Length: 243
Image 1 (cartoon, rainbow, N blue to C red):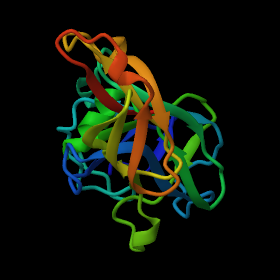
Image 2: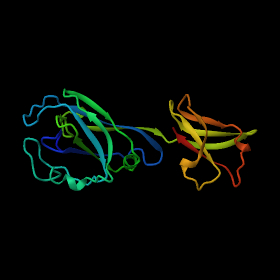
Image 3: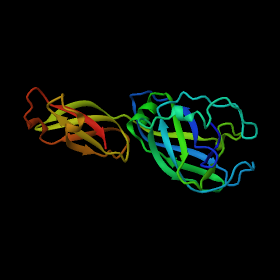
Image 4: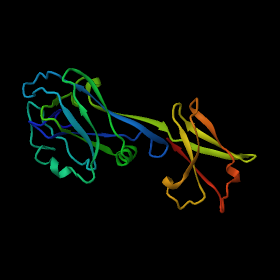
């Protein structure tokens, strides 16, 4: 974690990084991510001003920066700084994860992040994930506990919510209907079946033919009414998608 302040008066951004590789890359679906921090409304150090305003969180494609060894009371010239962060930013590839507002008082803040595909892929690959916080409102001075804070619960954290990746276990026929036995369903999630006769088509061109929201987590079934009667030269193909 770099300096623990976002302020248009002093620095342009805050950088943080984390690595996630617990669940692998192919057996789960990321459905939520939030950055949790503990704000200090009245920092004890007089070098920090106070102010409420909006700021942006971006995902950065470059996570190769190095943290400095200094502290607010004893800054150093090593590691990332205001003067060299421009070399790590890429306006053509970095993606916004949302705009937010601080509270200006002591307490925990949670910022739910957008989930663009490149950010999700970076998280799932287990790479170090770089986040850049930058001021939008010139009035903002956002101070929060850093990763070296003595109380672990006060340190910043990127919290990931994930569900198991659903799949089709088997297919069977019941008269003209096609029955799909599926696995890894989650309560409250809707699963759609996409259908095509042409594997060369992109998934966006497949047809949605049925859906189901399982009442319990685990195995569930989806019935495709009259699916076996469809003209299918060369075969029919099905795909399960989370809505």
